[in-house]
Image 1 (cartoon, helix red, strand yellow):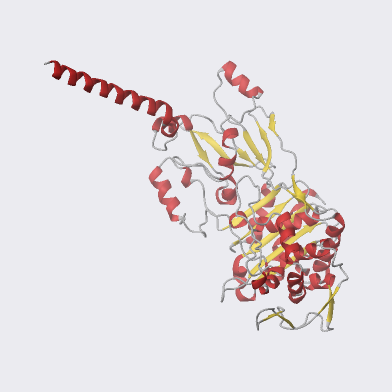
Image 2: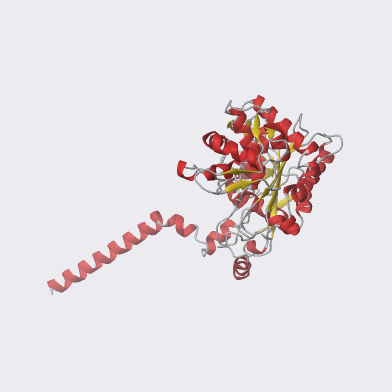
Length: 489
C-alpha cells in the first residue's frame, strides 16, 4: 500500500513539475513568439486596434492610411495610390511581416517611436485613444507621377534626388504591384494574390528594379572611371591617349572594340575630355587596365560593394577585385561591363557625388515624422557617406558631362535655357539579349537642384536598336523639366 501511495505521489509531483515548466515556458520564453504569431487572433485584434499613422508625400498626398471598420478589427490599412508607391510604402499584411516604409518606421506609425509628444500626453490624460505618428516622405507626388509617365510600360526604374541633402524626390520601378490585396483581412485572397506575384523570383514585381536589382551600368560608369583617373594624379582632362579602332587585351588573343567598330576621332589621338563627351570605349578600357585599384577604391567610396543605407533596403552594387591573371576584365570594368553591376539608385548617387562637389550624400526617404497635432517628432539632418573626390575633380567631370549633353552622346537631354550635365550608357547584357539603356544627369550644372538616373531593361520598346541616348535621355529630360516647372529653377 505504501508503495502505491509513493508511486501516486511521485506521479503527482512529476505532473506538477511538467505544468510548472510549461507555464514558465509559455509565459517567459515563448510569450513573444505567441503574441506575434500571425494566427493569434488576440494579437491581430490588438494590431488593428491602433489607428496607424499615415504615410504622406512631401506635398501632402496620403499614400498609406488606416480607415475605420465596423468589425472586430477596428482599422484597415489601405493604399490609395496603389501601384505608384508600392515599392516605397511596402505593405502591412494581415498576418505576416511588414515591408518598405511600413516596416522601417513601424514603431513611429503605431506611436511607439520613443519620443513622447504632446499628443501622447493628451491621449494618456484624456483617454482619447491610440493614434500613431504620420511619416512624411521626401517624395513629391508630382515628380513621382512624372517618373511613371516617362518610363511608361518599359521595365526599368527612375530615381530623382536632391544632391545636397540626399532626399529622394521620386523613386519609381516597373513592374510594380498593388499592395491593397496583400493588406486584405481575407487571408486566403491575400495569399492568392501574393503568390500570383511569383514572390520567390528575382524578377517578381515585389522586387524594386530601382533599389534591389543590379545590372551592368555600361558607359554611365565612365563618369566614375574619369573621376578615378583625375583623382589618381596621373591624368588631366586634356591628357591624351592613342585612338585605335580596337585594343589588344593582355593574356589573350582577343580585342576590345568601340561601339562603332571604328576609332573615336579618326585622328589617331584623343583626350580624356573628348573621350567622355563622345563615350569612347577604348580610352576608358585603357584607363581600366592602367589604374584598376584606383577605380575600385573610387567605386567603394561612392557606395559600391555594400548596400546603400536606404530605409527600405538595397541590394549592393558590385565592383570586383580583379586579379592579375584576369587582367582583360579590368578593361571591361573601366567601361562598366564585365562583372560590374549597379542599381539605378547607385548610379544616381554617382551623379549626385559629382553634383555635390565630390561629397557622397546619404540617400533617404524620410522628411519628417509628425504627431496627430502636427507637432514635429523627428526631422533628420542631411548626412554624408564621405568625400569621394576633390571639388576640383568634381568640377572637371561636371564640365565633361555638360559637354556630353551640349554636343556629345546626350543631346536628347538638352533643356532650353538650362545647362544639363549627363552621361549616356548602353550596356550589353546576356548574350543575344537587347542592350540596357541608361542615363544619369543633374541640372542646372552650375547649381544642381536635382539628380535623375534612368534605367530601361533591354532597351524597352526600342529593342536591339536601343541606346541610352535614344531611350533613357529623353526620360531624364522629362523628369528634370517637371521639377523645373514645380520649383522654378
